[in-house]
Image (cartoon, rainbow, N blue to C red; front, top):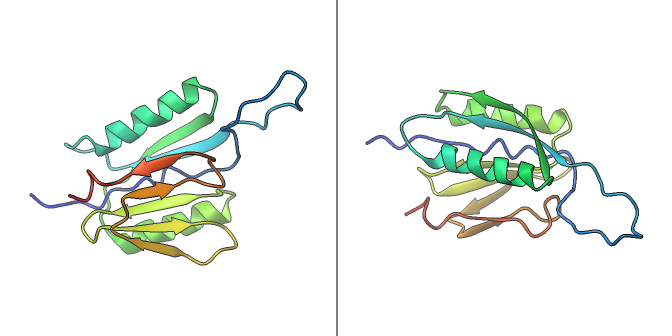
Length: 139
């Protein structure tokens, strides 16, 4: 079975929201705005990610602006798309390459961060306390 490059490009983030507020605290920041880019195929990884996004939306932690479907498996095309997201206001992007067991982390104003075979990817500081466990994806 051919392993496909899938992406959680979708974690394109434009705000900070995962916090609790006391009654006399200032108003909460707006929910994180997310566009989910997926190849939704005959596997479950994207369905799981979409379910997670809906759960976060139900908690008021994010606003799911849209879901895009991309069937391209070319890493160069997906990297270009990530740069476009950053140029248009996204604050965090994860590009997950299961073939190479590598995660590319995009943040505006920062150098591209590349993690080889990580167990967990943290959303801090954009998504405080949020972490994605990748152990099951890369095995």
